Image (cartoon, rainbow, N blue to C red; front, side, top):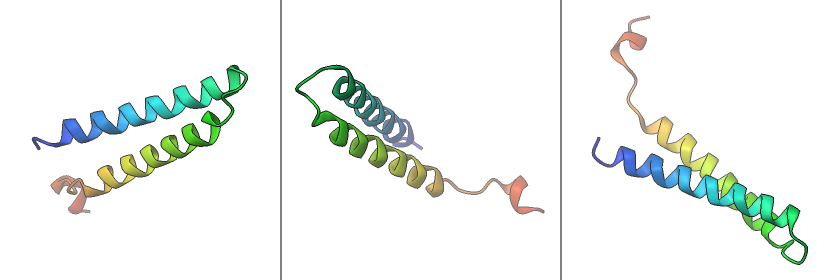
Length: 65
């Protein structure tokens, strides 16, 4: 479990940067290229979060049913 906080922290950081890039690309003129870049970063972060959650072991209480 030593790496888990680092993995989730990195994913949240990438998601934050992606959303910030999306917002900056929409708000400021001349940096429209940030919209696809931010969208790609946010999409990768969501995929990474999904993969990180999928790697977690199933709790014993959930496997009893």
